[in-house]
Length: 76
Image 1 (cartoon, rainbow, N blue to C red):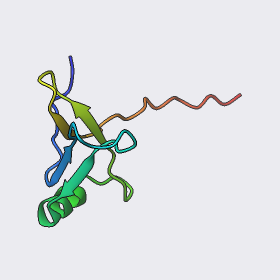
Image 2: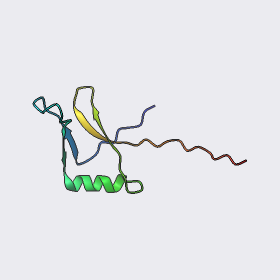
Image 3: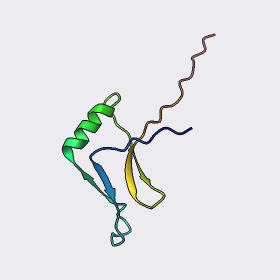
């Protein structure tokens, strides 16, 4: 079962057919929305975002919620 996507409020990633090969895309940031999103989703001062492509080909920015499994320490 996959987790529900959390879209990054205030972040918009775009590509165009006319951009040069060396340009991956452009990002627009709506400051107030982005600041609120960042503050509410930060962990230890960081927020990780993924830039994904939907099935329809639209680019979107999503919160990366991956957390590695914690391993138990073994003492001998």
